[in-house]
Length: 255
Image (cartoon, rainbow, N blue to C red):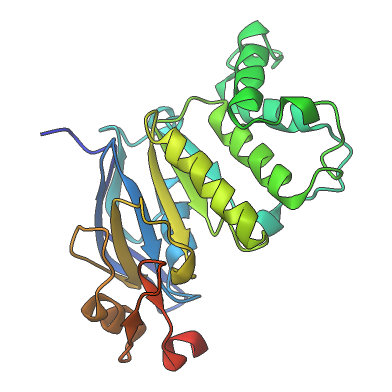
């Protein structure tokens, strides 16, 4: 059996007496497109921060390709929430994407080399934004900026791509195009997608889990009423009208 690229074991996060994550266990495999859904404040971003090594859990372990240190975490690519970027910063699209190579530069002084520039051009081509490379990052459309963010995560050749609420600030056509790009990347890396919006999940997601302090899953790409009720702590109704796995419960929407 293929070994997991990410293993989360018995992870708990407590802050000022409050439990953020409790007994979370998760395994991500090389061919996964894994979606983690759940209500706002349920711990989804916290879990990503633990996996990335940005937050030390109160207990439990995280292994990336069997390792636990900074070297292992270089196998991760990260696309944070869209709103965390300052698109008014005076930098070109190419320069923004190139900055994703900084963590891979070991020479002193830290200067980009030929390989860094080559990887940047490759990422720009992969995301089909090479024609935007010399434009200021503030000028492209929201969807094009989102592609630049993904390209920045790809230049480090990650084995796993982690995405935190990637479609919150883009429209429906851009969202569909975005998921098409992710589907094309699956041949190269595992993908972990975090979102609170169940309605945006693409049908090619391989597995789905619900997170609200605890992780609820049955290791398929179907969202069941039992999973949602456990995560949202209330009954929900599931219906589908051409878009799989959409939740249209009044109570769930209020969450």
